[in-house]
Image 1 (cartoon, rainbow, N blue to C red):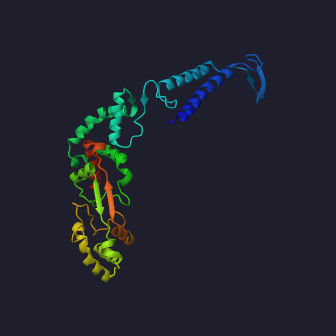
Image 2 (tube, rainbow, N blue to C red):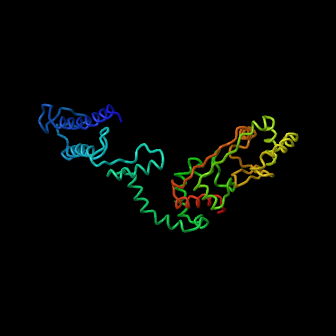
Image 3 (tube, rainbow, N blue to C red):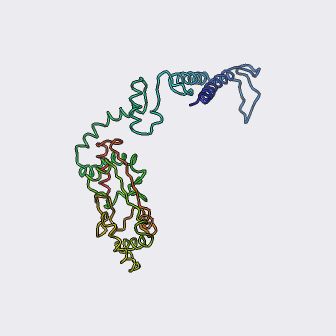
Amino acid sequence: MSSFWSIWISVITLGTILGCFLLLRWCLSNKTGIGEGEDMHHEFDGIVEINNQLPRWWTILFYICIIWAVIYLILYPGLGNFKGVLNWQSSNQNIRSLAESKAAVEALKSNGMISQYDREVAAADAAFAPIFDAYYKKPITELAKDPEALKIGQRLFSQNCSQCHGSDAGGQRGFPNLTDNDWLYGGTPEKITETIVNGRQALMPAWIDSLGEKGVKEVITYTLSLSNRPDLDPALVAAGKEKFVNCVACHGPDGKGNHAFGAPNLTDQTWLYGGTEKALIETVTHGRNGVMPSFKNTLGEKKIHLVASYIYSLSQPN
């Protein structure tokens, strides 16, 4: 914060407190010329106004609030660039990565400063570590049937995964639905855990240069035939089948995909970026580049174990 804004905030803050004090003092003085407890000669609906001071308890409460405000500003940040005598701050500021956050925590510790957020995180880790340890010892297939474990997994999912996959894990365009049995890399507990721990980097190259617009159209028509789309041009289907050889390495000769590459099954009706002809032409023409980040450092293996259990449970019959 620049010196100008620091001074500006300090002047407004201290001026407001001083103004409240002066206003209180002014209200405690009798400037009406009418004696204490006398009639103010104001009457409405039979109610007569009497010249009385503020209640004593109310006045004391105002003084306490003013004194507390001054003490607070001395102890804690609040006056521009002044950090307070306790060197307290709510969290590590201007953090852009986990590495920066860890470095900031260590720097605060070495300087004797207190971060409220870091203190709360440490307290939470100490309180909940035994719970996570106990769940980590159980297999995912067992936790997927444990209501209490699933509640924790759902909360972790909501905090870390719902931004992309939705609060109900139903996914959205470009982000897989986690509630069905269509898995790009496999839906076993081990594969789900592997995906969350290491993240995924999916790449489909653009084919416009290799196939041309006509070739893309033919491949798309053949691809649509794999999922039994009606009213397709047989000539385009036949031509596309010949050119589909370019896709076999990832999607397989039958178009049913390959978990090793994260290549989707093209014979069902599940489409990550949309299953219309227009959407498929866009995919083949320009390619796709999907990224899921690794959560190993963000959550740790024990919390990931619970998240994986929750995700696994979503695609299992009740």
